Image (cartoon, rainbow, N blue to C red; front, top):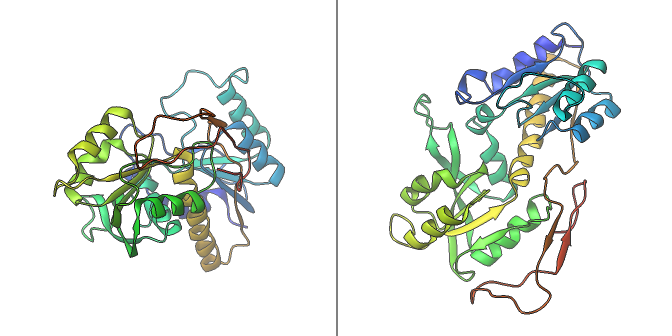
Length: 306
């Protein structure tokens, strides 16, 4: 069985901590470097439900995309919900390791996993990493479809392929417009609109789009002054595919080293939104928009209805 320090070294070969943004909090949060690791669980969020799942699974290591303490803390008291997470991890000998912005810009990274689940062919990074001479690392990805789709068809594909959440997929733009090129960015992506415009893509799929940046993006269009269709998915849903990609990467390393390591991906939905309400009567929509159902529930497991 490998020691935790050996597994962490393997993870950091995939997502070096020095490639994280300066404001980020990545790396090993808890764990004894000398403890043996037999089972690893990947998830997006280090919340109580995921930690409890790791304990029930008998995992020795939990790897999450989001940090536990992004802005630091002065206490890990069990009376706080994050402190309770720390206590549960330590009491049950479960280590926690975080790969966040260093996984976003990796090759392959979070946006590669998002593109793959949507059957998009990656062309290049949306925002290249200037320290990468090969030009493959960076934030977001510019992609192509093998066959053009309408905005409606591409949005339907995203709704079918991404994990189901209460939000589903919000769309801004003409549903009948043709889509050949797509920019994607897992997680919050409205800070990348300048790069999207410069890329001249037909559509942009990301998460956490705010009203004013989205409105300006639609009005301004792309570098060729064409309208860009926006697809806004749930933050968690755009990053969950990375967990499966990352688990496969660790599996390959385990095989090369001859480790008897069992790697799992959590299917627990940790998106914070649990339902979406829409009027039961006529709604004020644009001519290209379609009405939503009255109530859309979600659950804590993948496969819940959109």
